[in-house]
Image 1: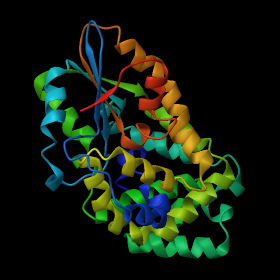
Image 2: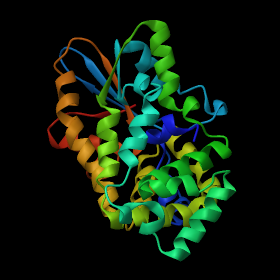
Image 3: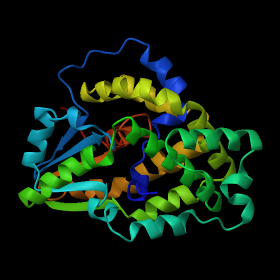
Length: 300
């Protein structure tokens, strides 16, 4: 399980790849001069909000000039979790502890039907994993590991993701770096998913894993083009039938982050806030939440 340190960054787009594929077949709006970057200007500073892709390839760089300009302007970067936590040697232990079931019926094999478990075993084998070690953990742990391993198999890695790319630049340029939450807090959102939600998480991930390769390139292109409408369609489709997961992993966290983001608007330094692109879109996304509070949020 050498990718354990990256599990918190595993994208959820594989949850409904069939729905995503349908969404991608629709014409996209033209936003060729936009990016997934927004700016709020105050009397004292600018706060930039960048929607990221956690897993990318080296060939997806460089980032757009607008994103690079925002990075250059900002004195501080704020991530979902401080990237240093994601490379902490103790992270593996935290994940194993967080994924340990409290009751035997919460473990992977006991939580799944025999049919889904057989599918899960085959899916794991297809990406070079053995399912047996996961039987001592809760289902969510297997689902995000499976997704992460498939992404790496396709050439997408967290080391090439937006967060690590900008974090390394920030270290080299001496910028301040902080996180909106901790790894422990992220784990609690996953660990507190209901048994039903965890079963659905595994089922969808397993059944749609092979379609992931067909949607990644269009998704990345949508992100690069700043096509908010299409990306919002993809996000809504990816959580279709998984309202609890969307609420816990997106909506609740967005609301938790709002006071912190608003506090940045009262500072004199400029900030670049970097979080997953799915947090930016939909009615409960950060952009709508900020606009509902009266802030002028301009896409760049």
